[in-house]
Image 1 (cartoon, rainbow, N blue to C red):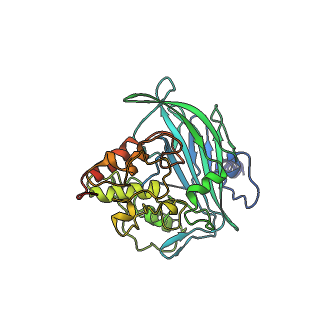
Image 2 (tube, helix red, strand yellow):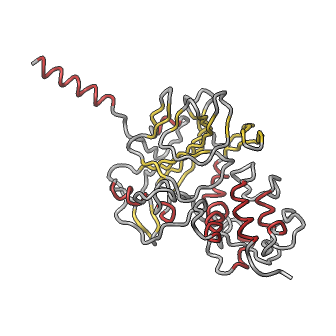
Length: 362
């Protein structure tokens, strides 16, 4: 009898230690991130709940060199489906993206290459924000949460926030203002069909998840296969693994187009907010003129840098596209949301691509 009682006690302790699953809030807007139960936060680390799947799109949006940890959760008993070869997530789906920076021994923020972390150690990282996209009956809704200084909780900031940061790099300190978008600004990127479109994910889509999580370095199974193994998706879409802009073995043009698609295509598409520019940067341009090759600006305002054409073949520094990528002026820089710093690697890639384009605009 005592032996059985001891066994029951052990089982009770084990059950009590098991983390509760994430919570879908169908209507309310919790003030604390912890109310969603997406993470196990200790004094040492932030760990995604075991019921979630850590994922990483083949191409990531540049956000002032911040690192990002993404998770996906679909409630038990529900399943995503494929509609026109794209993933249609069920009501209750929660997608998270946590932004953070690596730190040195003194706690200063440091610029570092993109890492592939499945958890975040708090002794050498600083948490900034966690954004949620939640699929409700009426569609997707965005929730921006900002972490407190002690890294013990993140709080809802529907109006967004900003803070001055200094980032150590090889060229010295980069001082900038880090912006957390408000709910309306989230729609600026996540609504790609204007004016009546709805929010939807940009990274957790079929064309990005057909790659494995450490693509192009690894040879593991695709993240789509992981969704199927969890029972969250019924079958795999018929899509090839996308080109990663970081894959130096791929063709230069393919890499440049992959970069522009992820960083610009959500606005610069036929139905996007930048449709008045007549620039198509989501890969569906058909001809390079639609990307700006020898094309005079239509709606660039003062953001042309007094240059004549969007792209001048063989002359990157005469191209408005590169000028706006390099600028940090609020009325000139592109993308206009999501960054305060220029992305040197992306600029270098697009510079190389334009430099090798043949022809002339004369």
